[in-house]
Image (cartoon, rainbow, N blue to C red; front, side, top):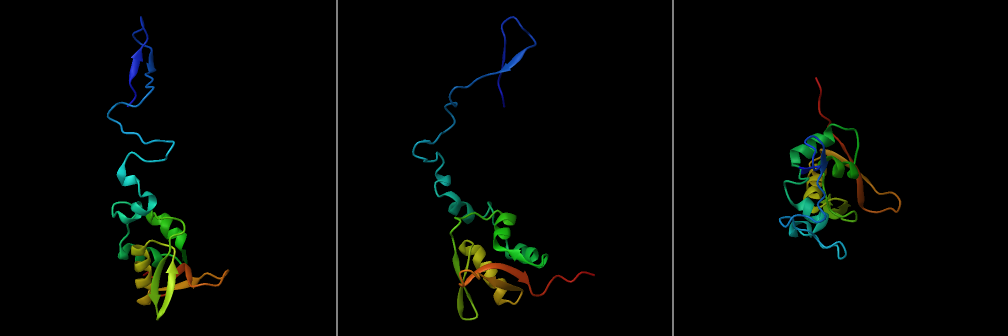
Length: 146
């Protein structure tokens, strides 16, 4: 909240107080080295994805989201559920005796693998360059609407 300072001799005019440095109770990191003040932030986005309160989804939420759309690119899963992790992070998933790679953290990649193995979702592989990387999924048994 902003502190207000009254000008001398004026009961009605107010100006925001200027704080040249943060209060002693606030920890700050070094901008030069890029080191954060909070150790929980030090692992960056990889730590963000591993904490259940930040960006975690359940298997049921993931299944419902996939079944509600005709096609879901993996980047849409990241955006929808706030899944962190580095941009280059991929996790292996075994499907039909073959190792495929999913551009999600291990936990969420495992959930996508479960959907595919259970027959609830199909997958599209990377075409250029040709490789075993899943870039999108779609429901094979969509939600029945009455």
